[in-house]
Image (cartoon, rainbow, N blue to C red; front, side):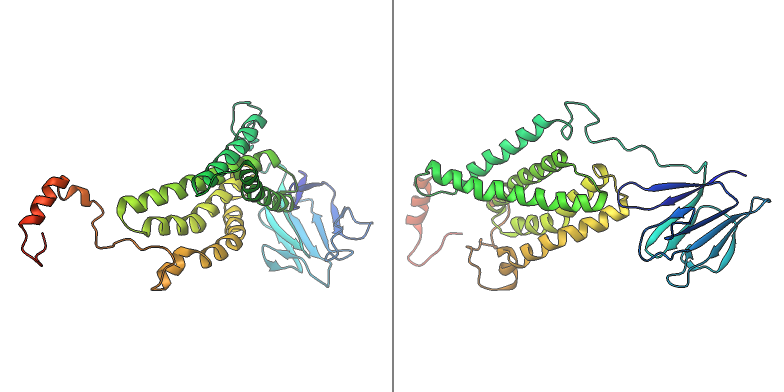
Length: 318
């Protein structure tokens, strides 16, 4: 009889046990053929019997947390087709044939190529320095007084370094819990790229406000950043760097991004502007066309003065 495999789902790397005997017992007791140490597993939880006609019989042995097969409670059954999904307490497993197809090999980020963005420490250092530089430039451009090096250093240390450090620490802990390993270099690279893109989008938003004589560009960009881009960035990282399944990565991305997105949106100036008639920011003249400079030719000051002199008192020019 051909050997079977029991794939036991664990955090990170799965565990595989070969089943080649006629009778195989699974449980928490040490006299089992396959031992599962989870406290929700019974001392003797499941028996797998392989008959001479190549049929496979599954017999539940547990009274507490009985075995479930393909999400159905099991007493005794003959397996007609593999694979079978098993649940023994909190332990999830699959009974699969030895020749069961495996997924394609996922490449390590960078794959040893020094020029790859996520595979080279030099890129990581460069992106960190770029974040510090743009953080300093933001402080310089928004300062109305003479810039002191001590103030610049405190701002960069407090805003840029602290922001990147907090995100790297929080996401690295989550990554450790999810896949049981660290990807610090790749994580720093990803966080720095997102930070730089956020700075670029912020500057673009203010430029678009001026271009369209309206406040909706920054509002759309602000909401789109937290509701769309951050979950997408986290999902892409989990799929391509941590190699999680697409469905799980998308769900986790939404759960991870929600504690960031919800408070940021609720406390944002853009939301207060939409919900309240009073805005702390100066409103743009919404009656202006987005492309007013194309509607009329510009006039010189002399021409404007001449037109004004021709008007009667109280009359307005078109």
